[in-house]
Length: 239
Image (cartoon, rainbow, N blue to C red):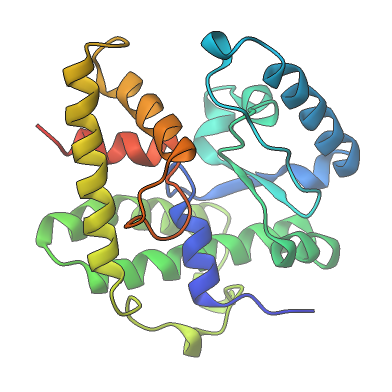
């Protein structure tokens, strides 16, 4: 079985809508193959609706995936919503993590996933370019640490999914790429406002920018398109 690297896990975290400890992995609570087929059937029906109602075409979910449930989902009774979410925001398509669900108990999987999240946030704090970036990351770090405390688990005794020796600073050029992507989002936001379309708010703008990037991604944009929620987080930093 392939091993998860810190770099690979970091990419996974970057595509999540929020950094928060998980309390459930839906793979352990259902017939996963049937769950995937049911979601993909719903996506097919969604894609058949007129474009003016559905927006972009949604892609199928791979069976080699997992659905992570953060603490706030259960607290706000949103479990059914995320299971049926065609945007797949909390679905992680990763063969290695999927294989781990076959080898580990749910309790062990959650502990190792949350420890991996904890290590990821620690590394991001060390790499933060400004004090405000560091402060913003302190809250998710505290939440993850509190989860271990509430579960009576010694965090130092839990191994992340990857070896700590794989953890390094941000890859060369990563900060430059991030700045470039944020600049593209800023320019698209200006374009959105100039067109006088939608609700002229940042939530609608994030959806419009996401659709636009999926249809026509600039050459300067390296890697996968940010999710709507990530684009919205960028927009919230703009005046």
